[in-house]
Image (cartoon, rainbow, N blue to C red; front, side, top):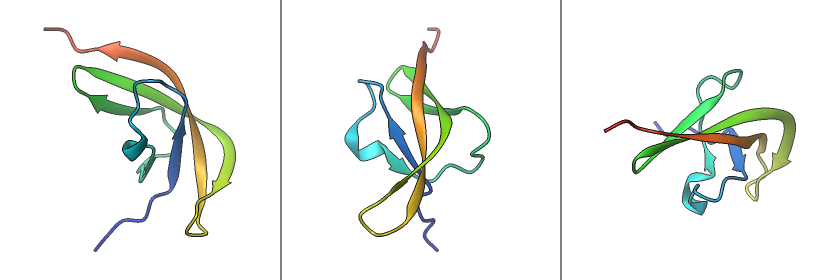
Length: 70
């Protein structure tokens, strides 16, 4: 069973294009995306965006980045 995307991530120069349309389980919390040695934090704007497949996705905006301690 495949999970359909429900979110699009906007902003954040470190977020790859292939990671921007995705499924987020809890859309009320800040979403953390792990990339290499850091987390990109995104928060819901409350807006929606219509994806090319016709689905309305919640827009999450990049807020800040944190690094994993070594």
